[in-house]
Length: 392
Ligand code: NAD
Image (cartoon, rainbow, N blue to C red; front, side, top):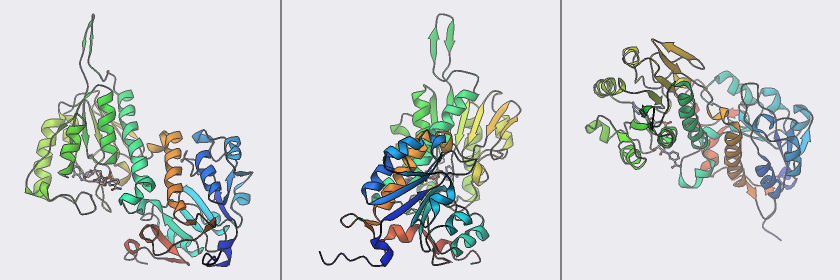
């Protein structure tokens, strides 16, 4: 049949996808047996490094049964591959082992370690950062921030419940009544909504706050109480992209008063407040923490970006006057079986758009907004608009 000729010579060959094991601190993996099967059906051959899925309970046998080749080491997995799929940013050595001009898709943390990113770009691969996926209807199935934040919101509540030396639901027993725990969620994006739902399922009395007016109804629909400073600034606090704006010092002052009054009576606080490209807003002061009852628990999901409390320390649980403040950095990774399965599906949905299903070859449309949106580097250079001004 005419009209379907491959654009470049390598596009006519079978596409090889490599998946290597992540580093020590990352239990997730970029493919699941389910997505290996789907990638194989697209016409790709998938190579997985031995043991890469073990921390997500995906065995080498399961990968083989799904159609993958399991290689004993990273070198054999990577050699001459067309595509590398990772959870975290790969090493220069890994990218250098691929075919020149290969595609790399991962959570590249593109704003971190600029020299490292430039070195990686220099290897000539097309680097695609999954965090940059445009949030449009078509990409919902590719949205790694949502799939992982959802699990993080769930795990934050489960961890807080475990750290809290009391029960979550109200229990009326012959020996007396156990009161329901009071849980306060600050920041009601993807993680916050799941945190509300999880805390409600555990029987807690839940309240939540955000600066975006759209969240008011969402909080109510989950059976939680919404509290916020609802002034004129609040009405304008959402950007066209659906994110929060940084709030004025006047708003922050009013918000702090509201939070100070509310937080005193709370047992568990989960904070998730973020503003794209900025440090996390400080919503909880040391004095507010001191006003809480000993035994109360705060889980701060914004720890990676500086934290929502004054006392948060990344990757640590700080105890301050009887209140525990946890600053976990990879909560989704602590539910690795689900996190990997969903992340792998996100990657598959993205890769699927790059394949010609009829001819079973790779045909990347470099003008597609999802390719342009995620493409961090190509042909040796950093190309993403939001990374240009940073001294490139
Ligand atoms: P995020 O991680 O950027 O922030 C978490 C929450 O913190 C947000 O709700 C934000 O409003 C809130 N916040 C920021 N500053 C605050 C402050 N000072 N006080 C209190 N709260 C504050 O958000 P996210 O989870 O990525 O979600 C952002 C938006 O994107 C939401 O509207 C979400 O529904 C939307 N979204 C859209 C799609 C899609 O259309 N495909 C997919 C996922 C999410």
